[in-house]
Length: 197
Ligand code: GLN
Image 1 (cartoon, helix red, strand yellow):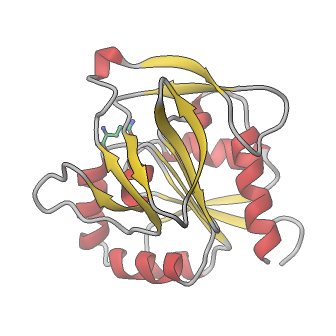
Image 2 (spheres, protein in one colour; image 1 turned 90 degrees about the vertical axis):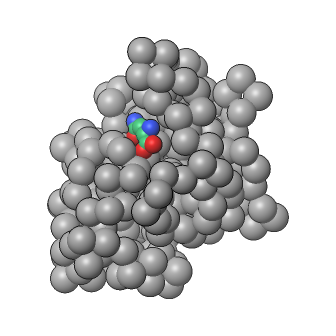
């Protein structure tokens, strides 16, 4: 791989455009990924925020669920925000019927844990591995992580709840750094992708 990794954004549903912009600012080549052939060509993948049940159903419909599981299991770097975090959880506490996960992080998530859409909020979040002070966490009907297994590392906590987790090449946040203009978390992820190549 060159110094400029190619990072896909799963483009089935959700805030794809914002991630493409954030990744480009973090010195990655960013492109939308909808099909297995497109997934095969990227060095890493972002799973955006949106609605996790819808995204999982579309992943099945587009023949993407198994390819996603395989690549994540094989160690492709992956970063999930909000709904994307839910998709990376090995277990969802309160899944809707037909809701599947890709898995990859040994954690249990609770959907909509921080409340309804109109209870969305922003907060400064200390993030292990991100230098230069706390990140501005935007929480929109956000999940939190109820518990993590031994292989997963908690990298951010807010209000006593786990809001960011890393396990090997997989990273997940309850909140949305792609909406803030501060691209340090995307830079961290780009670095994770670079170090695998
Ligand atoms: N509540 C949404 C879900 O369950 C996630 C919200 C978001 O991604 N902003 O998928």
